[in-house]
Amino acid sequence: MSDRHSLISAYSERVSLLIYSLVMFWALCVSGFIPVAHAEKPPPTAQNFIIPLYVVDPIAGPFIQLAVHFRPGGIDWNQRGDTGSYDARLNRLLSSNECKGCDLRGAQLQRKNLTGANLSKADLNGARFDRADLSAADLTGAYLFGANLSQANLRGAQLINADLRKANLSRADLRGAYLLLANLRKADLRGAQLSGAFLNGADLTGAKFSQANLTDADLTNAVIDRSGVDQAILCHTRLPWGDIDRDCDGRLKGLRAAIPLSTAV
Image (cartoon, rainbow, N blue to C red; front, top):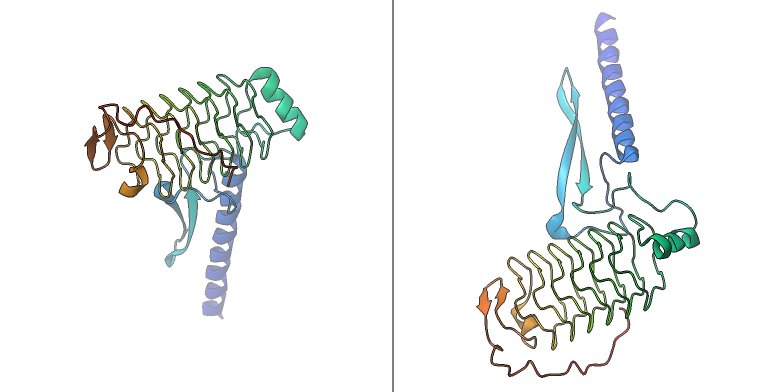
């Protein structure tokens, strides 16, 4: 009887510890202390790491492990600015030039003047910024999956760790832009001006670079196919496999980016 009582007591302690750990884990997620990536917006593979959480049984040792996928620079759900209606958030951006962490998916912002706007960590998936002025804007950690930024002015913009997968950046002005660790998989960069841009550690797998100007651009440690930049303008360009000065004689600098504008894919 005593052994049975001890066994029941031990299992009760385990169940209590498990419930306590799950409650604490939920509380940390809700408070934003542990950012959790949403399934519909997977973080870049190169940026994933796992935080293990152990529930320790004082009798038998660890018996459960929980793994949290965290994306550096991803949306901080504790600091989201997307309260209120969609129209209220849009008006906030247009009136104050700031909407940090806002949910503006599919926003129609063509030709808008958003110079220096703070849209860091905002959800801008599928938004339209074609011909918009986003020079010196802060788009750090923003989600721009499938966004249309064709011919947009992004000169000097902060796009560090931004999600730009399948974004249309054709003929965009990205001179001096900061795209460190950005996810540009299958992005359209045809005819884009990337002179002096910082693409260190960016993922450019499958990106289109036809007639893109990469003069003085830094792509150190970037993930890119050699064939992907074959048709780009390369002059004092720092690529993962070395510095390239192929087009410094001006042979390609006079080329006009005469390619049809594609819609956001």
